[in-house]
Length: 213
Image (cartoon, rainbow, N blue to C red; front, top):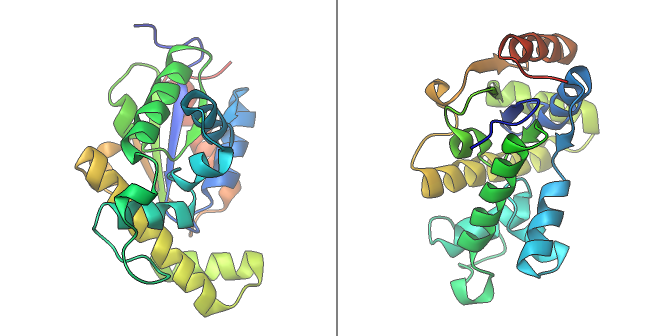
């Protein structure tokens, strides 16, 4: 198998840790593509479903995650009850197609991939850098409130939903803790470092791993 022309950076970020902003800036700094919203579009095309269905099964969409986790019987649906499996597309098919797309990115042009449990999918493949962005819950909460101006309790509910659902997704499919440092080359608390500094550290580490255009 090839290892990709330019290599790949995977970014796993807890809610409020700046994953999208950092991932986009790292991609720009390395001269690589940023793969986030394009992934569910590709999944939808391959499975012959609507983009809405693909997004409802995408790891990074909070409500879709809650529905996915509810369908696995591990968490109640926030609107009440548990969503029956029969009402949802087969979540394993979405996961398998997502894994294929992530692997094709690594084997082909490379890039920066946000979420999708990409560190677990790619493992110890050469020319990869697996990054985890995290921070204490209250600091992440404060950062979202400061950026968005949304009510504190509303953001807290979103944070708890996102963190719980993303953890359940990775634990269910990959049998590991997405916050465990052993799954990554680099773990950063992006609530105490300026995001520009976080980006610089990741770009430097990526270039040391032979990644970048």
